[in-house]
Image (cartoon, chains in turn green, orange):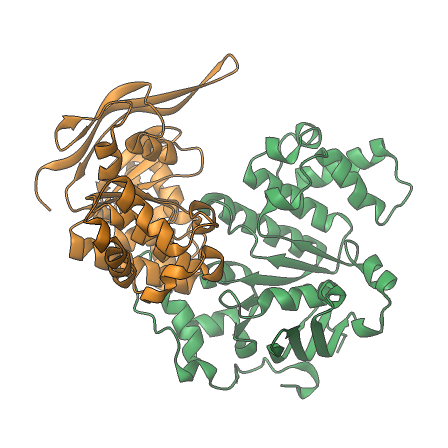
Length: 296
Length: 275
C-alpha cells in the first residue's frame, strides 16, 4: 500500500493559559489517501480548525501551543521539518481555502499581483505577463468567464462567489497534493455555495488532489466527501464512508448533528439536547475504515 | 392568523444612483404581512431582500410606493413611535451589539429611549428579558465579547423584544451560527412568536430553514417578487424556475430530501412542451 498523503496519529494539543494547560485535542487519528476527499465535521470549538492549522504548521509558531503525536505529510514527519522547509511546503505541496474569501485576499493589491505571488512560489523568476497568462487559464478553469477583467480588479470589486473561485484557482495553481478547505462557502449564498462545491469537486478530481474538508454542516459534507470523521470536544467520535455514515449514523453525537439540520421535507425545528453523556461515548468506526497501522 | 394585514407594502420601489447609472434594487413590490404570521423573504444576495427590510424599517427611504402599518401610512421620516413598532435582529450579533456596553446596558437603552415602564423597574425588566431568551440574569453585567455566538444572538433577540413591538424583522438571524446553535435559536424564535403573538419577516437564503419556520414565502429575484405562496405550495409545487433552482441548491442529509430536489430539478410538463 502506498503512503497516505496525510497521516495523523494520536495528535494532542493543549494551550498554556493563566490557569495551566487546557487540552484541546485529546489524541485524534486520521488519514487521507492520495486524491481522496475527507471531511472533518463538528461544531465550533470542537478542534477542527486547529487540526488544520497544525497540518499547515501555523500553530507551531504559537508559543502557548503544546503539540504531541505524529503528523506525517507524504510520509514525512512534519515535526522533523525546519521552519523554512515547512514554509516551502505551504502554497506549493499543500494549500488552503478559507471561509471568507473576501477577507482572505489582500484588498490593496489587484488579483493579478496576488496571483503572481502565488505562481512565484514554484517558478521564482516567472514574468508578470507569463504569470497573467497562466492565471487567466487557471481562472477560466474555475468557470470564470472574463479572467482578464478579474485579474485587473481588486477583491472588493468582485462578488463573494467570484472571490471564492479566485481563491480556489490560487490554491490549486501549484498543483498541491493536499488542499485544506476550512468551511468554504459558508459565507456565501446557497446557490453560489452549491456551484463552488461542484467546481471544487471537479477540479480536485482532475488533479487528483487530496482534500481535508472542514465543516459543521453535514449536508454540505454529504455532497462533497468520500469519507467522514466526526469530531466532538477534541475527540473523533465516528468515522466511516459518507454513504455508510449517512445511512446508519451510529454515534449519539453524529445523530444529534444530523437532526440539527432542518429538513427540506419539513418536520419542524428539531429538539436538540445541549450535551449528553452519550456524546462522549467512545469512537465508532464503520467497517473497512480502520486507520493504517491499526492506530485508534 | 387573523384576516387583517399588519403591514402592507404597496408598489414599493427603490432605485439607487451610482454615478450616472441607476440600479433598481426593488421593483414595484406589493405585499401584505398578516398579523401573527412568519413571512419568509428568500433570494440570493443582490435580489433586493435586505433592501425591502431596510425600507420597512425606515432605514432607506423608498423611491416609490407606500407602506401601511395597522392601516396607517408610514412616513419616510419615521417618528419614534414608528421606530419602536418595528424591531430588527441582524445576522452578526458581534457587530450589532455595542462591544463597549454590557449586555444589561444594551437591553436597557431601548427602555430608556422609548420611556418604557417605570424608571425604577427597568432593571427588573432587563432581567425578565434575559430570562425570556433563556439566559441567566447575571449575564447583565457581561460584555458581548464574553458570550458565545449563540448567546450573543439571544441578547440581540431580547433587545428586539424590549420595545414590545408586534413586528420583528429577522435578517439572516442564524446564518453566522453553526447547525446545533441554529436549531436552538430557531426553537427560541418559534417559542417567542407563540408566547407574544409576534409577526416575523424572516429574511434568509436558506430554504431548509424556511421550510420549517415560515407560514408563507416570498421569492425575490433581481428586485422583483417572482413568487408568493404558502410554505406547502412553494415546496411541493413551486411555479417559478428560480424558486426551484433555489430549492435544488440546498445541501441535504436524507434520501427523501434528495428525491424532492431531483423531482424539482426536472422541468415541468409545460416547460417541457416549450422546449
